[in-house]
Image (tube, rainbow, N blue to C red; front, side, top):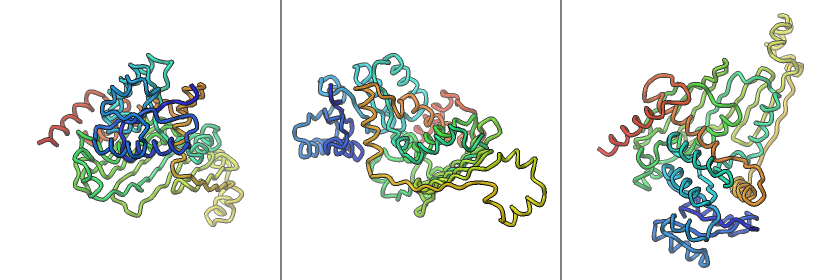
Length: 381
């Protein structure tokens, strides 16, 4: 096999983009094996754009056709685990879109099936892990360049969505159709990056507003306090009603600080002496100089770096890496099993707001599912 034949399940905006990347030759080790969608209009569109590519209305039929080696699931969130499992059952390599699922119980089932098939490649589309900026941030943390983490802050409110966005489809922004709002639709990448870089918190306490500024049942405003269990804390803020938007990540360590603005500018300030050492050794004359801003250059060194990204480049990198693992065993950037972490965080944030108290991770899966089903039932009424 020189190229992986990818079956695209769901020929919407994302599936259509993947087909375009592959057809343009941007994914060197992959070709379109087949396309699947239940919408008749998509069949016409696919026939016009890719007349030589088989089209299926049933994804199981596509998997069993022999036309594909792997599939990508660009479908509503609830379906990702189900389709991933069906692929694994048929020895098809699954690339699952984010989030891996709506609740951890279903993602665990998918992870279990994948563990039983170690010869198959199971990955997730966490394309931000290919972003050189965040890869550098992770490297700085992993190499202990700013020391032990004391606090993380991420304000990511660049997800503005008007009411018309939610009114496109009946399933959108519903508990039954999507399983949540900004946490499961827009912010899964940041939830993944946060835990990938800084680790999972031990507990969360959240204030979440549902239908705050939009006529929807699910959340459009989230503020969460993270407790890492070792004294370190964090704050995560996101929403879909801030048309100006802010994207700012700060990570404070005992040897320095990382600040990321707009996912483009990385500022790293490395202390010349760890803060605990400065705390013990500085006299009040030294402290006065700091207060007056006279000696900051003696305290830390500053590195600023600008990053640029080509549209689609990160998704292409994930597709190439997925195929490279299948063909040559190249390590995965985002193993599918990692997808459960972001789902666990989203579940904990929801549950904390529903119960009105701090909750520990991992959450009680049965309790979470019961609360979710209660909201689905209320929504139907």
